[in-house]
Every structure is written in structure tokens, then in C-alpha cells.
Amino acid sequence: MRAEMQTLADEITQAISLLRRHLDWEKANKRLAELNDAAEDPDLWNDAGKAQALMKERQQLESGITSINTLEGELGDAKDLIELAEMEEEAAVLEEAEESLRQLHADLGKRQVQTLLSGEADANDAYFEVHSGAGGTESNDWANMLLRMYIRWAESNGFKVEVQATTAGDEAGIKSATVLVKGHNAYGWLKTESGVHRLVRISPYDSNARRHTSFSSVWVYPVIDDNIDIDIQDKDIRVDTYRSSGAGGQHVNTTDSAVRITHLPTGIVVTSSEKSQHQNRANAMKALRARLYDMELKKREEATQSAHDSKTEIGWGHQIRSYVLQPYQLVKDLRTGVESTNPTAVLDGDLNAFMESALAHQVSGEDKQIEDVE
Image 1 (tube, rainbow, N blue to C red):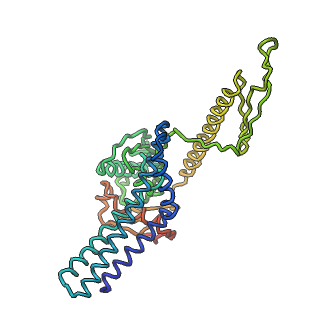
Image 2: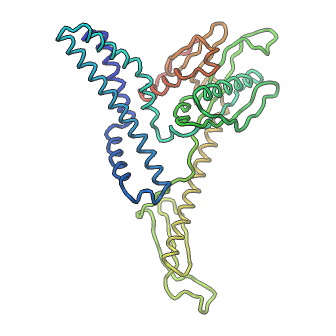
Image 3: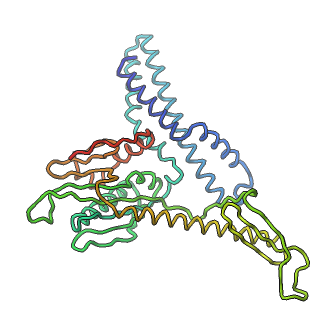
């Protein structure tokens, strides 16, 4: 195989290896087999919510595994055909096989993204927030430019957009905004956009036309279904029965029908003291699920608040992308090194190349940032 073709084949092989690692190949195949078995259970749809969650997980896993298998199959076919054509000295067949390999390599980015969008929440709708940094009017205007950029990206990619809230700047732009993006894989596409974005330009608000640097942050998080399945295992609970107390007379229970359930990992205690012990156990379990769900909500709120608080320091740290309009024109992703010399197009929503590269970068395990360009 010619060196050029061998290089292309090696790059495709490396990409497939990264995708396998991202998917946790053996675990994913084992889980898919379990889900396929569960899908054949005739009683599955007795619980519609659980069935829908199972089928969604199954579809995501199946899509990721099929995509990787297809890539491997097409790569193997192209390599075999090249080898055969070289042995038989069939120039026309060799040219066709090499072109097939080139096309597979050219399509690799798009196919990678399809496989990379297989995370638990990737298919969900998403919220994104924009917050201006220090700098008053300059940063407020920059935040407004980012808001417009993401709305245009979303609409041009077929997503529906709902602006949930905005806080206007004192003179221009916005201090913050929250937007809901609806559509399949909205969160998967947007999730790598969280971070600080830096703008360098000649300020339209500076009468001396000086160069200004502004910062704004973006935060993306998935819309989560509140129908959380609380898994309570028998080993995690202690069930006690006792004789309930009453006002006396005929209403006092003469059997140990009341139920107390203690959730050992959290220390939550729930009780029920109706007449039926069976009903009491059912009531107590419902109460325990409700308490654990409430605890999960509070944890989520605390995490949200913590992340929100961390956005108050917007500056040179945690930058993901710089947008330079003056003295030259360049948009550069500081994580992947992807660049565009057309900031106008990027600010009009042309972000797919940056997003695709960032998704692939997450899987590659590379942690070092690309040196920023001043």
C-alpha cells in the first residue's frame, strides 16, 4: 500500500480506537445484549416510563456500536480491495479503492460526531446561559454578540430556540441571558461550549478607537427528565414493624401492623400506621422514594448554585476560544487549535467545525491547551 494510503488507513484506525474507548466497547456490547433481552419481555410496557427509558438507552448504544462496526467494515473492505488491486496490477480498480479510502477519511469527522453524541444526556434539549464579565458596556455588548451567535447556530441547524430570560446591560448589550434549545442532540452539540470566550476588537464605544479585550462566559447544561427512577435496594433498608399507638379503646391496634423503614445510607426514616401492614409498607416505600427524590433535587440545586457562583470570576482563566477582530481577524479554539479567519461567519453561527473538533478532543484524552494567539 502506498505511503499516502497507509497514512490515511492508520488515521482512521486510530480514530476507531478512540471511539471504542469512548464507548467502553466491551461494557457497551454487554449492556446492549441485556437491553435487547429486556426489550423482549412482554411485561416491559406495563411501566411505560421505564420502558421508554430502556428503549432510549438501547437506541443510543445500538447507534454508537453500529457506527463503529460500519467504519471498521468499510476500512477493511477498502484495504482488502487496494491490496488485491495491487497484486493483480489493476490500475482502474486500485484508483477506485484508493478514492474509497480517501472518501472514508474525509467523512470521518462527521461519523465521529455521530458516535460521540452517545452520552447519557446528549440527546436531550439544552439550556445555555451567557454572562458578561467585568468591563461594563464592552462585556455586555460581547455577551449580546455571543447570544446572537448561538441563536443563529441553533436555528441554522434545525433547533428551536426559546429565550427564557435576559438582563439588559446599563447602556448596551446584556448582562446575562438564559436560552432553551430544543431538538435531538441539542445538549450533545452544545456541551463543549461551556467556558470563557474572549473578544479583541476596536471598541465602538471608545471615542479614541482603542483596542479592547472583553470576556463573557457560556454555561451549557441538559434539560433533565424529572421522572427519576429511584433505585432502592433491599440491603439499604431496615424494615421494622410495631404496634401503633392510639387514643385507646377499640381503635388501638392489637397487632404489629405499623411500619417504619430506615434508609441506611442516608439515615432517612419514614413510617406508616394504617390498619393494613401491607398498605403501610407500600405507603412507607412511596414516602421513602419521595424523600430520596427530594434529596436528589437539593443536590442538583446545590451543584447548580456552585457552578453559578463559579461564573463570577470571568477573565483569563478557563478560556476556550478567542475572537480577534483587530488588528487581524482570527477565531481560535484554545483546546483544539481549530482556527477560522472569517470571524463574521463564526459570529453568524458557523460553529460546527469548532464543536466537532471539541467533541473529538474530549475523547482523545488530550489535556494540554493550545498556546493562545495574541
